[in-house]
Amino acid sequence: MALNIEDYAIIGDCETAALVGRDGSIDWLCWPRFDSAACFANLLGEPENGRWRIWPIDPAAKVARRYRGHTMILDTLIETAEGFAIVTDFMPMKIRGTHLIRLVRGVRGSVRLRTELVIRFDYGSVAPWVHRDEEGSLIAVAGPDLLVLRASTPLHPDGLTHVGEFTVAEGESVEFTLSYGLSYQDAPRAIDPYKALEQTERTWLAWSKTFEHAGPWSEAAIRSLLTLRALIFQPSGGIVAAPTTSLPERLGGGRNWDYRFCWLRDATFTLLALMNAGYVNEADKWRKWLIRALGGEPSLVQILYGIAGERRAAERTLPWLSGYAASQPVRVGNAAADQLQLDIYGEVLDVFYHSRRAGLAPDGDDWALQIELLKHLEIVWEEPDEGIWEVRGGRRHFTYSKVMVWVAFDRAVKSVEEFGLEGPLDHWRALRQRIHDDVCRNGFDPEQGAFTQSYGVKELDASVLLIALVGFLPPEDPRVRSTVEAVERELMVDGLLRRYDPHAGVDGLPGGEGAFLACSFWLVDNLVLLGRTDDARRLFERLLALRNDLGLLAEEYDPLEKRFVGNFPQAFSHIALINSAYNLAHTYKPCEQRSGAKAPADAEGLLLPR
Ligand SMILES: OC[C@H]1O[C@H](O[C@H]2O[C@H](CO)[C@@H](O)[C@H](O)[C@H]2O)[C@H](O)[C@@H](O)[C@@H]1O
Image 1: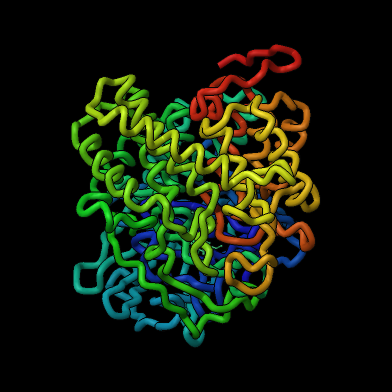
Image 2: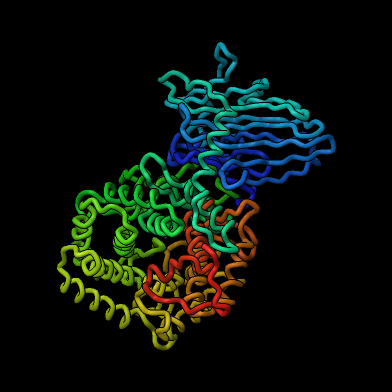
C-alpha cells in the first residue's frame, strides 16, 4: 500500500523521475522516460506491483529527510538506539546510461537495514526473469526491458522478490546501483556511484546557483524551481505536468488522470516562471519545442503532446492496478488531447511575445507560425470549448477561454507595435476590441458583480482570477475587485480556493475534489495587484505551510482530510508558487510583467534586494 502523497520525495535525471517514500520505498518509477511504463507501481497498487525498499530493521528508528542543498539528491537520516546512518538516493544525469543509485552510509554506531526489491515491468504486471551474470549482478529481463542491480551486499531470491540484510557501522558504506537497459542490447556497464554522486551534485548546484532571489521566500522558490527543472525532459525541452498518473483528485474517486504529457498551458506558465527566475536557456529550449510540436496544419494543434512532441495520447485503463487509496480507474494516456481549448492560443502567443522581449534570438519561424495560429483562431474563437479545466461534461463558452483569445490578439498587436513585425495590425486591433466587448458583455454578471465561469451562467470559477494577471482589465477596474471578492466568497473552503463547484455538473464527473492549489496562488497575485498586501502575505504563508517537509506540492489539497490529492509533484502548483513569491518579494513581478499593470507599492514601500 502506498503512503500519503505528502510522504513522497521526487528524485530524477531530467528524463524520468522516481518517488521515494518516507519509509525508504521507491514506489513509482517509469523508465527510461517519464511516459514509459512503470517498473515500480506500488504507488497505484500493491507491493507486488513493484517497489524497492531500504529501511532500518529497528521499528523504533526515527527517520527524517532532506534534499542535499539545492539539489535533487535525497538524504534520508535514520537514527536507532544503536546508531545513525544516511541513505542517499539520486539519479545521475545521463552518465553512460540511466541509473538509480542508493548509498547507505554509517555515521555513528551501527545500523542494521533490510532491502527488498520487487521489479514488475509494464506498470506492475510483468514479473521478469532474473538471473545473475558472471560478476554476480542481478539481471532482470522481460520483453524490451532490462534492469541490472549491482550491489555491494548480497541479495537473495524470496519468491518473486529479492531481499537482503546488512549492517553499516560508522565509516562503512553499502552501494546499490540499478541501471536500465534494453534487453536486446548489452547490459549497461557499471559506473562509479561516488563519481556519479559528485557529478550530480555539481550539476544541480551549478544550475541552482544562478536563480533570481525572492527575498524571504527564496528557499521556497528555489525548491519549486528545482522541481520544475526535474520535470523538463532534457533531450527535447518538453515539460511534463507531473511525473505521475492517476493520483486521485478525491481519495477513492474516479478523477484520476495521466499527467506525464506536455500541456501547452502548463509549460507556458512554467516557462514564464523560469524566465523570471533567470533561466533563459530552458525558456529557449521550450520555445523551440513548441515550434516543433506545433508544426503542421494549425487546425490540428493539440492542447497536450508527448514529451518529445508526439501527438498520440490514447487513454486506457490498467485494471490490474487497484489504484491509489483504491481510487479507480488507473488511467494512462489522456483523452483531453482531443479537446478544443481556446486558451492555449493566447498562452502560446504570450510565451513567444515574452521570449522576444527577453531577447531570445528570434529565428523567424515563430512569427510565421503565430500568424497561422491566429488565422485559425479567428475562425474558431466563437465556438464553445472544453476550457482550462478540460471538462468532460460538454463544451461551453468559458469566460477564461475567451479572455485568452483576447490575449492572443493583444500579444500579436504588441509584437507588431514593439518589434516591427508584419501585421495585419488594424485587423487584429479591431478583432481584439470585438473579443473584449464580447467578454465584458457576456461573461460578466452585474448581479453578482463578477465574471462567471461561462457566458450566461451564475457559477463562478477561479480561472477568472487570471483576467487582471494577463492584462485583460487593469486591477483598478471595479469589475476586477468585485470578481475577486465574489470568488473569495463563493469558492473558498478553509481559506483555500476550489477551481469551481464540482457539484454544479459542469465537468460531467461524479464526486468532488480538493482545493486547487494554483488557484489559491492566483488569488495571492490578485491581492498583490489590488494592494491587499497583508492578505496576500497571509494566504501565501498558509499555502507554503501546506508543502511537505521537502517543499513539494501536489495539484490539490483536501481540506477535510488535510492531505494532498492529485498528481505529484505538480508543475502548475509550483509555477504558481514561484510567481507569487516574486510578486510578493517585489523583485520581479510576473503579474506586472504579464498584465502591464503596476501593483501598488507595499505598505512599507520596501524593495527587497535582488
Ligand atoms: O480534472 C479534470 C482534468 O484534469 C486534468 O487536467 C488538469 O491538469 C492539466 C495538467 O496539469 C491542466 O492543464 C488542466 O488545466 C487541469 O484541469 C486532466 O488532464 C484532464 O484530462 C481532466 O479532464
